[in-house]
Length: 336
Image (cartoon, rainbow, N blue to C red):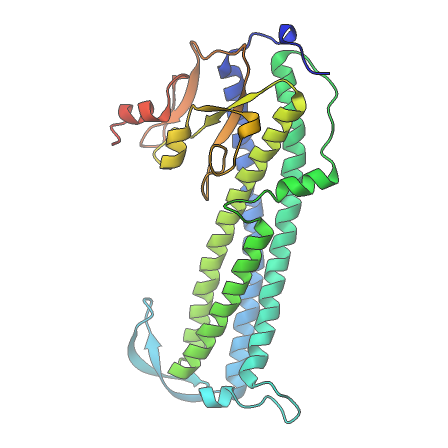
């Protein structure tokens, strides 16, 4: 049974906005633990790749003059180092094998990369499921607490939870994004090894390039975690709004600081019908690493006399009028 308008407390919008800001801040901080877990997976995978490449060079390499690569990837001089000739690398790995030595190495490294992404996918799925389930319940509770009226509501079913955490961001789910990135990383590793052997690079320079590539991929994975957290957090908020039967509209809330994107700046303070929420358009996340959130809007709420949190150019926190939108705040900071 839905809450009657006569039963809704006369709360101002500041009540809902501030409670949402505190809740969002708390949830958004949880990504650091998941990122650290991911970093551990990358460290293990990188160590395994380095170990296999060094073993390959130890088995098939010879000490020769090799180009010495600087930090910019430019060969500035030569050095005596362990080198595997490309012709040696492409010989059959055995009398009964149709694969070359290099193909055997690449296949083994492919298994390591697959395992890396398998662990990431499983870990992120568990993390997002926990966030979605907990925040959904908390979101409904906060609505009822605000209006001073409670009622029974349905828990998220396993099927609904699975669908929620797989809400696409920019057209793809995190599992699909991981698949694309895994394939790209495997292709890049293959290219680095093949090109490096053709150029006569040492095992030291090869592992250095591979470590750099793994580092770039790890940064991309961190961005995925932060973006997916924002997506699932806001999706579970939206499901909570709908389950409460109280709210019909939501307000878009961007962060008032100098890191906020132009898309979020323009949406800040705008309100939309819950039924018309479209992630990436008028509902966060609207871009990778999005930090925006939403708050319910009730017919009985008002922003008169309210405040909201902002951060000046030095990062210091202070308050501004609750009716101030990002475009107005920007003028107070002298930002064009």
